[in-house]
Image 1: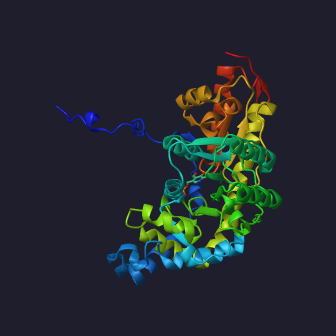
Image 2: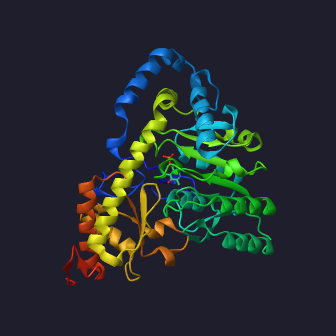
Image 3: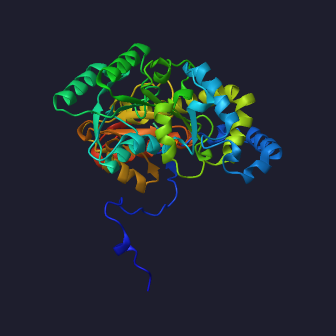
Length: 409
Ligand SMILES: Cc1ncc(COP(=O)(O)O)c(C=O)c1O
């Protein structure tokens, strides 16, 4: 007889997990990176050098650098954030976390409680939407255009909340290479968001996950850099610039809220080895690594766009992204991408169905998100061809693929 945990489980737990069965052969899901672009040799050298020099310090929690994490990596971030994002901060304003995911939980934990309201982009990072749902928080989705979250719609939503007596807690935004739309919010729009945040007393939570991956290397200043009222919390990660399995992210916040976040971090510190190795690696190599990575990602998205054009023709609509690792694709209205996802998975092709990435199910049901960073060029070409075949079989589109007229089976 096996022990039954069921009667012991508290109410309100999320549904049980399903066991992991491995990645699909053609995997366009998740935020995985390009395996060929992980700077393995330099990471080995950095790990060896840092462990030789400071390995004995692992005997002390946080290598004796305190709860905010390994100071040399925070010092690197101070310089990087100033140079790239215009952020003026000190190492004391930075908290190192095990990837930005636990950072999202910390900020949510400090600001949100059941019944609260947050405002966010309508098409959004699935895990952020599920986090809000699990917390019992209402997420009001604001439509995007080619420049990201629309400020007229944000202003209207804030006014509407006020009229209803609802005080939203925060505007959660991914302004710099948004997930999934890859839009980049221009500076003027950022200024307007900050103005509205102050007017309505709503915090801004800026998720800058993909900001290192803009093809041109040029980005608008971070909201954190532009905000003069201490109303912005900024979060970033090394997952997309170096590797997601490293699990190193960083929160930048004024002490007024950092001091409320720190007591919620009860893990006795994020892993110090990865922080030490990153600090050692990043000083000499980070800036030179990025252009190589961006070039490789740009080539991948070109292969993906070519493959979609070849296999789906005009049936697949998308914007040529200015950066990132995702393409947000619109198929004809009769295509239910949740069903497409299920059918394609049986053929070894994994996609992210739009409904999981949006607060607006009607708008997103014929959309899908494709990650182009982790599949090889060959897998992209083959995977898209299979996807088009499955789509034609299930929904009758595309009628023409690879320049060949097709009929519904
Ligand atoms: C917008 C956004 N925020 C945060 C994360 C979490 O990344 P990580 O925990 O690896 O830093 C992701 C991952 O894909 C993301 O897309």
